[in-house]
Image 1 (cartoon, rainbow, N blue to C red):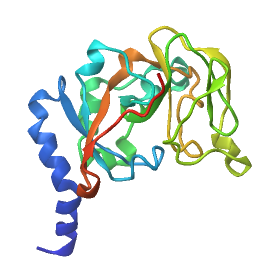
Image 2 (image 1 turned 90 degrees about the vertical axis):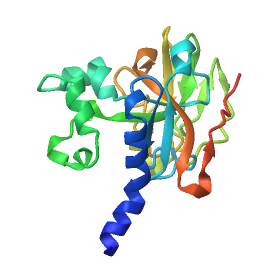
Image 3 (image 1 turned 90 degrees about the horizontal axis):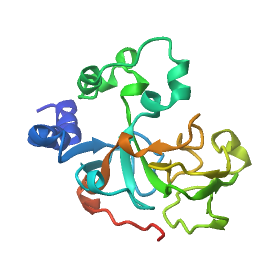
Image 4 (image 1 turned 120 degrees about the horizontal axis):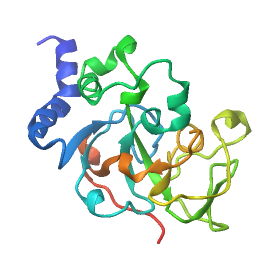
Length: 222
């Protein structure tokens, strides 16, 4: 076995196995996910593998502090859709393109097929602000966020959009990345908020790497 094949097997073996293992229940119960970026550092590391549980949020709304996976804002945000020069891709096309290795072919990739993973920070009916540091203020009170990886500062201000006293609509949520200095999240979307119907599921447990294997806890505020 050459080194390149061995590295591929170690890198993708667990994910491919679980992909096929849960394929029969993928649409209803759970599915594996791969973390491609550092927007959720330090909680989620690049190349982490997670299981996303999909049942509980069908019966209840997500809680503050929960990590959720959802459809790309490019597929539902009216501002992003207006900017498109072609129709939205079909669900079948997106399903096929999200399978490895198809998902790594740049010319075939459509942003509307992506899935995002962020943390819920504001709930329906709340008055929310996000300041220039990336800190969240709910109903005029800053919330404690022990999970934040890095806050914004003047050196990366272009990624640190602010939100000023906006009420979260019914059945919508504000979701942000823990790495506030490097996350494309609700602060930069034209529509700002995530509709509940676009949520795929919540981060349930991490199965790779083995040293961080375990269930996720919710550090959110009441």
